[in-house]
Structures are given as C-alpha cells and as structure tokens.
Image (cartoon, rainbow, N blue to C red; front, side, top):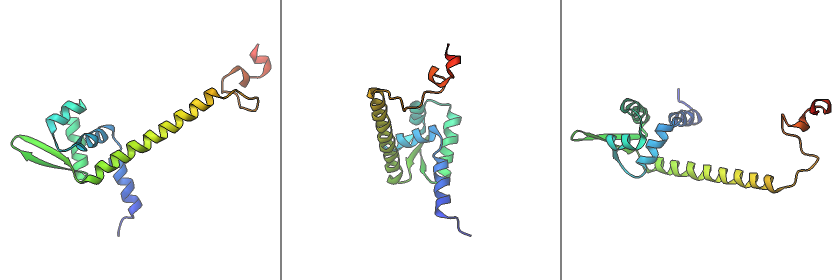
Length: 130
C-alpha cells in the first residue's frame, strides 16, 4: 500500500520541527560543514547535535562523509536551502504585515463600537468599576 503524498509531506515537516534541525539546515545552506564547526555555531551538547544530525540523515535531508577524523555534513540537495529561504521570506512577510496592522491599530482612534479588552474596566459591570 502506498503512502499518500500529503502524509509524506506531514512526516517531512515533522522532521523539520525542531529548532536545532532548522538551525543546522540554515548553516548547511552556506555549504558543507564539519561537525566541530556546527557545534561551535549551534552551541549545544555534542550528543544532542549528533542526535539531531542523525534524524536529518535518516530522513535523507542531509548527507555525511568522513574526511580524515572529521565528519562533514551537507544538504542532500539545493531544494532544502530553497525551502529554508522560502520559510524565511514567508515569516518575514507575515511579521511585516502584523507589524503594519499593529501600527494601524495604534494610530487609529478608539471607537465606541470596539469591544473592550478582557479585564479592562470597560469589561466589568458598572458596579464593579467603582
């Protein structure tokens, strides 16, 4: 029985669902790196980094090779770096839009048809405001 594509996509995004894995992928987007260099940039325990790299490697998102005593990791393909850049653009646009909305709300005069903030004096009965 074949697994539907949407389910495979969900598994793929679950694999990306850890901040250390995302940071590693961002770093590897600039090119292959030795584990010791990743450790310096990510600043976590070696065992934790090893575990996260193993998850990415098993999923086929990164590859590894040995050069002497160093283990070098690289993205499995350029699409991974493209995905990280797309996510950054998406989040930047989303946060920009939210900031613009917040600025608009701060600049707009309050109107009587707006609902009061929960917990504000306007939200309580008149007897409780005194």
